Each structure stands twice: as C-alpha cells, then as structure tokens.
Length: 383
Ligand SMILES: Cc1ncc(COP(=O)(O)O)c(C=O)c1O
Image (cartoon, rainbow, N blue to C red; front, side, top):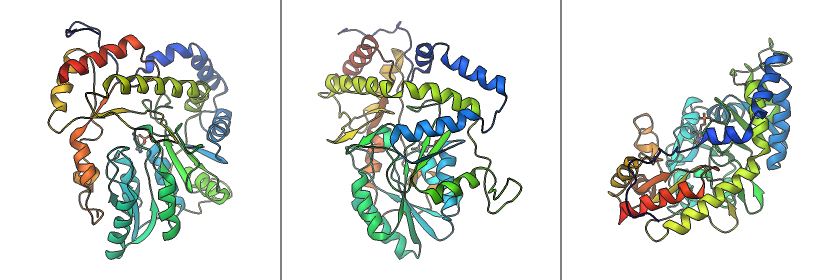
C-alpha cells in the first residue's frame, strides 16, 4: 500500500453509473430505441414484461411498477385507506421519504429507534412506539421497516409484533431490493414492499421509478386503480382518489436490461464489501451482516467515534475520494418531522449513529486497485 497521499490522482466516483453503462454496451440503446419506434410511452409492453420479471426475481406474486419509491409507499398507504388518526411506525434513521409518505396521506409517523450494528428497526423500541401512539389516542395501523443500506431488517421479529397488534407491514426496500433474509428475498415480507429505481439505487433506471411487490390480489387491483387517478371500470370512471404514478415505458425498457445483470452485480458488491471489511476492520467499525442475511450494499457505511469523521471526509476529498453522510440528522430532528411522536423510550441509538456514520464509494464496478487507493487513504487519515 502507498505511504503518501496522492493529491494528483483521478477523482473516484461515489457510484459509477457510467461503468455499468459501458458493460451493458448497446443493449439499453437498442431497448430504448424499440420504445421510440413503437411509441407506447406509457403502459407499453415493456412495462408489463418488466413487472413479471421483477416479481419472478424475488418470488412475489405481483409487481406494480410506478413513478418512484416515494409514490410506491404512498400508493400502498392510500390503497389501504391509511389516513387521519392512524399511526404508522418507522425508523427515524432513514431517508425522509419513509415518513413523508405517511404524513402526506394524513396519518402520523411515529419514530422508532434502530440497532447500532445493523442500522435497522429495533423491535423493543417499536413496542414502546406502539404504546406511545395508543397513549396519544392514535390507531396503530402499519409498520414500515426499512432495509437500510441494502441490509434486510429483522423481518421475523417485526412480524411477531405486527401479528400480535393486527397491523400490516409495508417494507421500504428502496435500498434493499435484491437482499435476502433467512432464505427469502426482499419483496416477499409483509403485505407489500416498496422499492425505488432512483439511478443511484442498486437497481436503478435512468430517471425516477419505483415498484410495489405483493402477493395480495385485492391490493393489486386497488394499486392499479390508484396508479391512474383511481380508475374503476375504465379511466373515466373514478371510484377513488388516485395519482399519476406510472413508470415510463422507456424506464421499464432500461430496467429489463439492468435486471439481467443484477444478480451478478449483487455478487460483485458483496466482494467489494468483504474486501473493505477485511482491510478496515482494525481501524473503524465496519458494517455487520448477521448470519442468514444477504445485503445488496446500497451503501458501505462505517462508524467512527463522534468528532472524527469530518477530518476523514476532508482528507479523502483532497485525494479525490468522495464520501457521504447517511444520515446526519435522524428524521425526528428534521424541521418537517420534529412535531411527530417518538417512542417513549427515546431514540438514543439513531442520535448517536447520526454523529458516527460515513459512507465510502460502493458499486459493482469498484476495481481492486481503486478500492486499495480508498482503503490506503482511509488508513492514512486515521493514523
Ligand atoms: C429508504 C428510502 N425510502 C424511500 C426512498 C424514495 O425513493 P424515490 O427517490 O424513488 O422516491 C428512498 C430513496 O432515496 C430511500 O432511500
């Protein structure tokens, strides 16, 4: 490994979308060209083909594609009639869209703490949050566990509480689609799973996109209605409130090509993560994948004692190595969400994580030489 900083070195991308594009060659150009030729820009044949392939990928019965991961969450909540007076439980250590979807349908997000080692929902805190909601006169309706950074939540533990309380699970797998838990694929836990095809996601398209996975036939029918203005027997028969929330046919065509190499990319991401873990475990707290879990590594997130990460980020940036902080503020500390209830036992783990986490470049095309450059720079900066 190098002993000295390489200030003149080429900048490294945080996520290398261009490398994937090179690998796919002309496949995506040809797929999008076919859409430009047939001109069915909405609900074209690629949309239904992609939905079947996505459902088959994870073993769900149905997939409903839509306009974004946020809309996927909103659509399920709308389809289930979640609204004013209802409590929906979600981690505070997540991207804002998890709780935003709840607030946008008029329900109340109630914030739950996470485990420090997995970054995912802690069911002891969930129990406390349910008690908080009841004490405030809210009706507990649903839990949105999040498969943060690509690692599935502890879905069995969540199901235990959800069943006892007669709630439903809407899994937020915007970062976790492609992961596995105890032999089952993400996309098959709870009533429904929402995912995102934002370009930087493990399975991303070339714009905004999302999908819902479910085994529930009734929910499927309502989701399809919500997706296009609450249509009934035809699109001018409006039986409920809905959205304009379709996935563009061009994006479906892109995703069909990307799905073909997704398993291979997940393997490559796991190799990158294993190399990082091996090379950094003696200098930082590296991420943990519990036995029986498979991560898709949407992020590779390390932890440092509070107060140390800014200097690391600065030192890496000088060498052209980008980092990111997911998330510097848990949602209950964000202006837009600070009035919503939190688990009565508090959210101390999330608050600590917000001061400790920093993510390093992670994607399926991070070659060993580039990774060594990152590792070398991290180790030097922390010496
Ligand atoms: C955990 C989580 N939930 C929801 C979303 C929303 O997805 P989208 O950006 O496609 O609306 C994201 C996207 O960043 C996310 O990371």
